[in-house]
Amino acid sequence: MLGIIIGVAAVIIMMAIGQGSKESIRTEISKIGTNLISIQPGADMGHGGVRQDPSEMQTIKVEDYEAIKAEAKLSKYVSPEVNTGGQVIYGANNTTTTVYGESPDYLDIKQWTVQHGACFTESDVKKSAKVCVVGVTIVKELFGENFPAANAVGKNIRFRSIPFRIVGVLESKGYNNWGMDQDNVMIVPFTTVMKRIQAQTFLNSISVSALSEEVTDDAIAELTQILRRTHKLKEEAPENFSIRSLQEMMDTMDSTMNSVTIILVVAAAFSLLVAGIGIMNIMLVSVTERTKEIGLRMSVGARGIDIMLQFLIESIFISVTGGMLGILLGYGGVSLARNLIHLPATIPLWSIVVSFIVCTIIGIVFGYVPARKAARMDPIEAIRYE
Image (cartoon, helix red, strand yellow):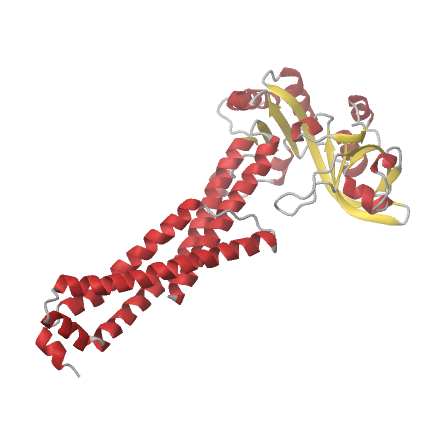
């Protein structure tokens, strides 16, 4: 039974973690909306699988962003992205953060809310102003745990020796399901990052929000046309950029998570195979030890089918009982993973049904050989067996 218990518990835990992780990631993505479109430099794959030239990763320019903003009819919000990381300082306190160079539309795209103060403006973007919007984690790290977030507005902090004035503090979003602190962010005008911090002329990416999820595919086609024109690509020339919607990313993630879950379940299922072989061996030993009993039953009228059913039922009983205990152990393991390790885990109902079916099949398949051996015994020889 122990092999069945461990095997079923392992399968349920693996399936629960895989299913829970997939649902958790889908939930995080759906909060933003599947109408989010990301434009990245470089083609999807290097030609013939060859690594792309570094210049291919610098193909997205400010001109592309301006053309999209002016011409795209199916896009509601557009924001260029230039990101970097480093240490932000206030007085004797400092913390490490990620700086997002964006446009004011970025907060609408990501559905973030400024709780105190306001976002920087298009005028700040044009002037490459040294202003920023920060998350509450930065406020706590730089000004103290009990410092009111509203009082941080107007304070000057430094990033790489460059002073930035806080114009807004974001509403807290906490940690996401990947353990990333979503409040440890610093958002500044993208032109400020490009000119004052990174000294670069290209964008890392462009985020676009389509008018609705229904027109996302049409919006991608429209964006492709605009970028091919701004990049001066001939009709037969391959694209030096890639455009992905969040729905595509979600589908890819689903496929990947399903593959990982299958691999984990198959690995755990091997213990069920070993347990089935164990049941067969135990039942074969049982048949041998109970040879006289079998002969006696047959001598008083038991048919071969009766003897076979007796041993099959015993085998199924061992397997199904082990399966039930395995389900309870699996449920306990999932609860520990969810509450102690904080892993997203959800037990699908069908996994319990499948466990019962698999345990019954194991009992039948691996109990059949011993049961058939018992049913074919000669009653006279069985009674004489020592």
